[in-house]
Length: 185
Image (cartoon, rainbow, N blue to C red; front, side, top):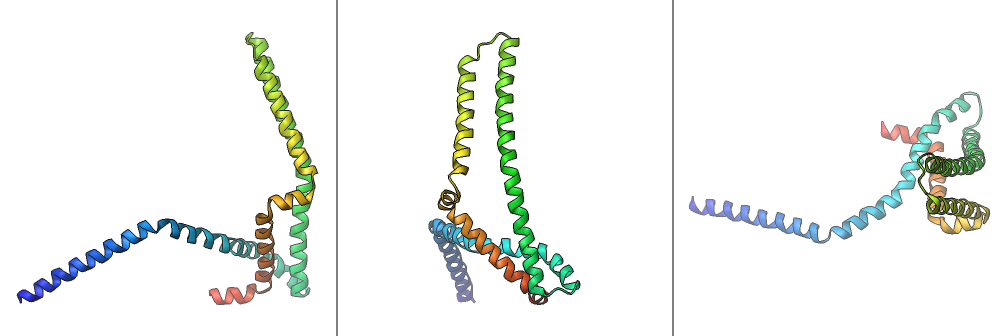
């Protein structure tokens, strides 16, 4: 009987030591696990986005299929409309962005001038600095956009590759959404 109690204590002690060892190993190798999780997230993120896009667009594909269009043509039409919408929004938004940015900068400078005139405060160096900085921002942003597609591609290749993977996977998911939905159920 006394030997049984001793064995239970030893096993509790061994189990506690193993748990402490596991916690210590996890703590020491925490950087490795964070890096593995980060890389795994980078790999799975485009597919997660692709599935969300495909799931959102699938009702439109179904509507086109119900109107007697082939499924592949329906998927092509939905994806083409989506890409076209983003291109149109991008071409419309960039000039508006520059106009609004210029208006914001001019309003800030006008506000500072009015405050300096109303309360007789000399903001001269601040006004000149803000004006120069705002003009530099607008010029640099304009030159960044005017440098063309190649500079944009070279600076953001990872984002573009993620976008291409997500778009390709979403097209695949759209084509096979019925099979995916059956597997989920």
